[in-house]
Amino acid sequence: MVGLFSVATIGVATLVDLWRLIDIRRGLHMRVFIRHFAARALCLIFIPLAIYMIFFYIHFKVLIYSGPGDAFMSPAFQAELKGSTVESMSTVILNITKAIPYYSNITLKHRDLKVYLHSHTARYPQTYEDGRVSSAGQQVTGYPHEDVNNQFVILPVDREINPAVPIYNLTNEEMERGVRYVRNHDLVRLFHPGTKSYLITHDVASTLMSTHMEMVMVLDDEANTRYNETLWKIDVIDDAAGNKVKSHRSHLKVVNYIHNVAIHCHKGILPDWGFGQNEINGNKNILENNNVWFFDEIFHERIVNGTEIGINDKDDGKEDKTKKKLSFLQKFFELQGLMISHNAGLTSSHPYSSAPISWPFVLRGISFWETKDGLKQIYLLGNPVAWWISIIGCVMYGVMYVLDRILLRRGLDDFGFAVRRWWDRGVGFFIVAWLLHYVPFFLMGRVLFVHHYLPSYIFSAISAAAVFEFIGKVVTEDTAHLPPQAQIRSWMTRNHGTVGYWVFLSVLTVFNVAMFWYFSPLTYGTGFATKEGVQSRKWLKSWDLQHA
Image (cartoon, rainbow, N blue to C red; front, top):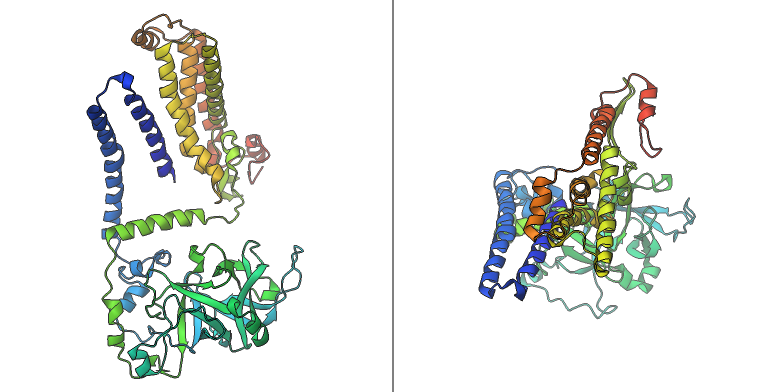
């Protein structure tokens, strides 16, 4: 995200510059302006973008083997990684990969957590510990072990009950085999034979995630009266509608027909009444990665010892083996999208997270490591003097900018055109950079830490330095009566600042170095001789110093 903020910073500065150049008072012909525009587009957009994409091109060429992050990628992406499960299935004919006939007993397995969609006779409690009320319906959970209660029967939709479902005409292949296969974008019902119930979701908050919908099983009578709620759409990732759904190979989302929520599983564990199993719920954010499943086991009368009767696996797998490889751009954009969505999905709370408003004031740090032996702790904490001075400098810029504009409106111009231009464009650029690297974090829903402020802090420090130089060197000299270029030369060459200005800089430098040394045992984890030494470093109660 910091890269995007940097692009935005340069983009804003470039647009301001182009807006200045297009002014007719500048006297530039449009041909000249277009050349200016083209030069900036080439050097600030296309060349940086090309360099950025080249690194990913090298990345894809060099990193060709499977790794622990495979699960986040699409099956088509994984199929090109050597040693991945999907690649093995694409290059070796395995019995475990097969089409899924309707009326099969199937198990659905979560792609990332490797738990099965599961149900049993136990029910949700009527009231949770936090006072919220449930439907007290039959539980649906994620179970990590093989069990008969993981099995569901996959059923087609009855058009007599729901005539809105398109008519499906069996293919010649299906008529010859006497089956109908589950296909991408089909509407299906999931029947649980162990409890003779159907899977539905409804508008009741789930146990652990109040913004998600509760997932329950309902018996025949209720399932018939709520028929459309028992319908689920099979949505295979990166596959065309109508293609056969394959076990293991087809990574898919199961989306409710009425409520438009996906079957979702996460790391949250249910209390004792849920037997410590993973929570399953309905997620309104269908694009989230934790909604992805695959069919694991298939039980059907035509499938014996893992092979469908009368089917040549080699022929049946041709359509998959001839799929085109992903282009570089397809891989590139998939990876960019996953990085953004994964970053946005980091919403779980963390003991060392902090709000953006606290960062410039060093109200929270991050503890990376601690041990009682030697009272050691590695604690990420900004230099308080440097950070506080920097935010003061940024605030001073804002105040001085407003005051200068008010004085100009009253006909008072103490700075002059050239100095003001430097003040607006030079220092102003760094203030804009600080804001563009800082303010967007207020709009984010992900968990945040003080280290997210580090790029913004650099610009705040530069801005503060420029403000102090302006006060110490520019304000002390009357240059408004001089020509523009002479104004700049005057305070850049002849004016070296007052004695007070250099005393201030010297004291500030000494304090910064002293604070660096003072807090270095926390920065580098070298430890303290006594507990009092730790306590003396805890300037604020919000600092999480373990031995203070």
